[in-house]
Image 1: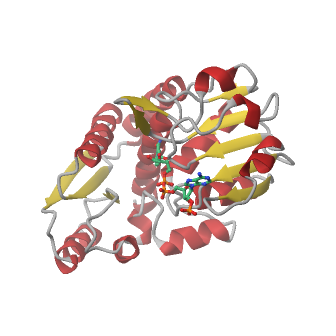
Image 2 (image 1 turned 45 degrees about the vertical axis):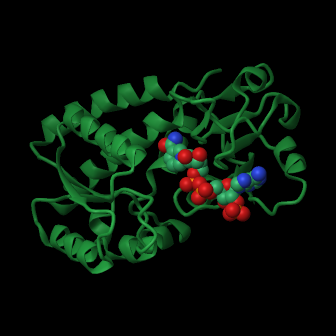
Image 3 (image 1 turned 90 degrees about the vertical axis):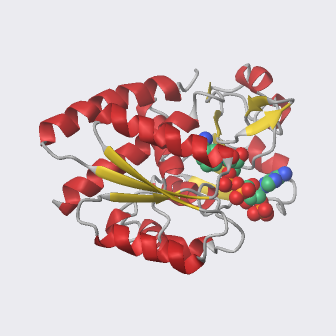
Length: 275
Ligand SMILES: NC(=O)c1ccc[n+]([C@@H]2O[C@H](COP(=O)([O-])OP(=O)(O)OC[C@H]3O[C@@H](n4cnc5c(N)ncnc54)[C@H](OP(=O)(O)O)[C@@H]3O)[C@@H](O)[C@H]2O)c1
């Protein structure tokens, strides 16, 4: 089974558009971008296009790559205070002089639609989430939509970043899976992957999971965005693994579109909560 993130996200965007229109609200998302990294610009543009599709207004704040931390924090503070703004997203990664934790901590928790503020991460950890990070949220929606059972399942998450691996592991735990988190120092990674009912790969290593490594019938979620000979590919050798897996996400068209729809859903939720 192909877990078609593109199709599911299209369906959810259409539903969200109707829901927003019915609500009479005009949600508004502020995107903040520091520097001119082409990938970051592309992601922000895709998010703004999704906003347009569902009826969320968006404003863009653009700061130079050598921007001082203080200036960025001051802009975030303005957005926190601006009552017309429901959600704030600061596109990561940030230039080296800016520590991401300082920035994520500065975003008001009730406008933190990316879910990276330590308070929101803590709420997730305590099993009482408010806003959760969009990529793991999209993954959980995909699993749920396709009826993939998490309760009692062995889940292996590869990667322990704040953006993907850690929150994903906690969300699977909250959904009653038995979770193992693997990372670059994990010894015998293969043995962990082999016993998993659900594998979430967020390592960012092109095609490093092959068919020999997985259990027959496993669900494989490929978060990786890598380029090989200029071509986009995931962490998973899709052609080989799809013959053995029970369900698998493609790259592109799997987790990526689910991340964007989750951001839209969080922004509408923020708007409803504030009003
Ligand atoms: N589709 C989407 O919407 C979406 C969203 C976000 C990210 N991504 C993609 O997902 C990937 C991960 O993103 P990220 O932000 O989490 O990256 P990251 O911060 O670089 O984290 C990568 C993680 O993978 C682990 N790792 C690296 N090589 C490994 C190996 N050989 N074996 C086991 N673990 C290994 C690292 O371990 P250590 O901690 O020990 O270094 C780290 O925890 C990237 O390709 C990124 O582009 C996609």
